[in-house]
Each structure stands twice: as C-alpha cells, then as structure tokens.
Length: 255
Image (cartoon, rainbow, N blue to C red; front, side, top):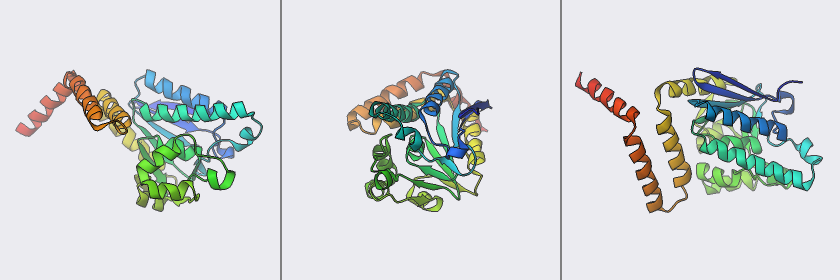
C-alpha cells in the first residue's frame, strides 16, 4: 500500500506531500494524523521552511474524504472536525513558514489547510473554493469561516462560503487569496525556490516571533498586541543573531 503522506527534507526545507492522488488527495483521518506527525517532526528538527503540496496536478486536496465520513459515527465525525482544526492551528502557529503549492482542486478542507499557511502559490489550472454549504449542507469548520474573511474580506468570503463560488487561479490572485500564479505544474518549484532562499537567509527565531505576533496579535486589544510585540522585540534584541546581522549590515554600508 502506498504511503498516504510523504515527508522529505533537503537544504533545511521540508516538503510534505499529500499522496492520495487517485482520491484527489482527500484528507482522511489516517492522513491527517500523518500530517500532524510530519509537522511535529519539522518543528522538532528545526526545519527552516515547509512546502505543503498534493501529489500530481489534479488536486492540492479536495478536502475531507467524504466516503470515509459517510461510514463514520457522529462521534467520529466530530473527532474529524477537531483534528482538522488542530492541524490548521498547528500550521498557523508553526515556527517555520509554511508555503502551500497548489495545483488543481483546492476545495473544502484542502483550502482551509492552505488558508493556515503563510503563503499560497497556485498553478494556472487551480480551482479554489469552499463548496460545503451549497453542495453538502456542511460547514467549513477547519477555520475557513475565520481565516478566509481576514484574507479576502468579509463580502468576498460570504460569496465563497454561503454561495459556493469557486475561484480560478487568476481570480484568486486578484482577490488576494494567493500570492502568485505559475504555469500549470510550476507551483511546487516556485514555492520551493522561495522556501530554500528563506531557510538559507532568515533567522528562524525572528521568523517564529513574527508569525506568533501576527497570529496572536490579530485579535488582541491594541495595547496587549503592542506589549506582545515589545516583549518579542526584547528577546530578539538580546539575540546574538541580530547583533551579528546589524554588524554585517553596517560594514556593507561603510564600503
């Protein structure tokens, strides 16, 4: 039996591949557990950046595995929702930046996973949407109703979530849902190039601080968020990495 999730590391960048191409990389519970473990491994090993992709060009992920959900008990379905939420939060709070390389269908839970990432790059043939309400009488419950409005705005999020609008890659770029469109099949290479450059150049502690401030400061009262920023800055100011980089920058300016 093929592994449903692949984990590879090169140049301090982890590539995590949802490997269920025949099922359009649908996320069953077994794959979600493996995804959580892979993210934990990347955190433990101090990986500099992560690229998340689906196998093949048909789908990044079409979302939850509906065939599995159809035979689950209500308790199992609730556990599935909680697992999806947990992993989305883990991606969002992961100390390393996570880049979604999107080809083909990116729907439902697949889009919700990508929304938790720090950057989304899509091939030209990608389709992105949250069709659960319209097609299944289900809800996007892995953070979609929270993260999507923050990225594209409330009005556009209503159009996608309530009315089930699915965006092309060009439309998603125009809406700010993705950052870059590549020729079909080019999303992974573009994401990997960014990830490798980042991992080689950026202090992981500074990146982790920045991610936490954005994630936790967004909904906090202004003064609380500013104090969080201040405390993080005190930590970074005391780091040897910052002192080294300031010294290097000064020497470059003096040349």
